[in-house]
Length: 255
Image (cartoon, rainbow, N blue to C red):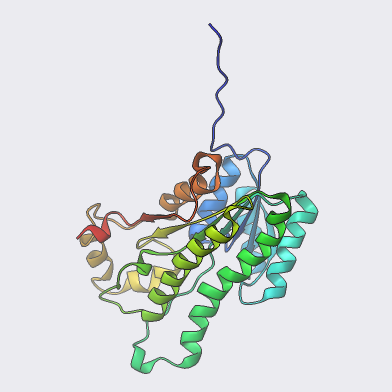
């Protein structure tokens, strides 16, 4: 009887990964898991001190970059390719949300949300695509949100919701555009998660309790709850998956 060798499709050995926004929150958790899976990991962020500390903790390389600055994103991707020789996996995790009533919101506030959450994703995808297309392979995961499907309450954040809906459709569109050229593009949509972005809302009286009560699992997510889906979509375990979004909301949308 011959013994068939078994290959772990989640194995990241030999893969090079870039996690934009990988110094904190969901990006950090994803980068940490990818490093544990054996990938060579690069993370970006705007704060050098916290970025280098995060990189040391998860055995990654820190690169300064800001998704609102095209040149810094292009430079980060160029550095990855120069140092590692290629780029296989990319996660776009940088994002921002604001809770300001629409009637009080300035043009600048609205534009900032879209510039980071939507145009920032475009800048990152464009840069990594230029690295992946010549090698005819690669996998990209954009961090969207359940807010791309539902309207959050009791807090209202219309620009954020609209921006994440845009990320979902941009992901699907790019999956079609690049699918025949060897690149898969998917997204994950977290529900309420214990990150720095939600810290202020979670501190408000009754807010966290209301979020928990609205989900069948009766809790909010930890960043590590999201990281597994990111790793799956990047890896060969999802080799026939593209243009797909995985919602990780603890069942929030079911009621």
